[in-house]
Amino acid sequence: MLLLYTFLFTLYTYFMIAQLKGTVAEIIGNSVILSVGGVGYKIYTTAETIKKIGKIKNKEIILKTHLAVRETSLDIYGFLDSEELRFFEMLISISGIGPKSAIAILSVADVETLKTAISTGESSYLTKVSGIGKKNAEKIILEFHDKFSAVENLKNSDAVKGEIDALEALQTLGYSQKEARDAMKKIEKNIIGSKDLLKEALKILGK
Image (cartoon, rainbow, N blue to C red):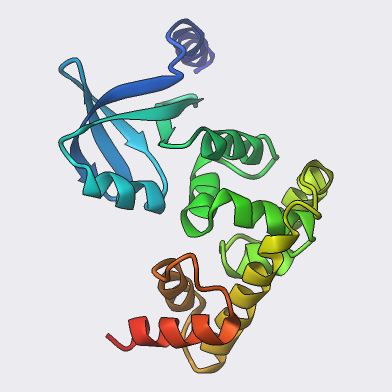
């Protein structure tokens, strides 16, 4: 096992992949198959990236990538935006938060909104919107609270609070946390008030 790990680590350091440029051959769940020079790379990514890529299928794209090395596998995680990649790597630097958890967090909220939640200490946003456990939410805030300026992110604080209030209202109406989160993900980013968010979420859930 140690020999295998050493081999994988050697591969990682030798073939460091910072980005891949190619065409999307297929989308499978939360991953894309990117065709690069005749080779198909399976790249795990966020729901928002999947959505964007779906609109430009068969066109050439560039994904900023992170290669996750495990004892039995090498997994590539990719992002259209460098800021998303940096935030992803910050998240996985925290003990207890792996690549899949980081992808899940980034799949339900954009980086700026997550920074706002962290800088203002809104652990409830991370647990209710991102669906991670309270312990990990507190870890994230403890690790990164001082890295993000609350002043810079103040303009987004109403959006964070609005989402929390709307989620709580939906659950009060009998919807599960997952149903509520999934509906919120489909709402346009320019809608921030809790009442407007609730109204749009109910329209989506009613379809």
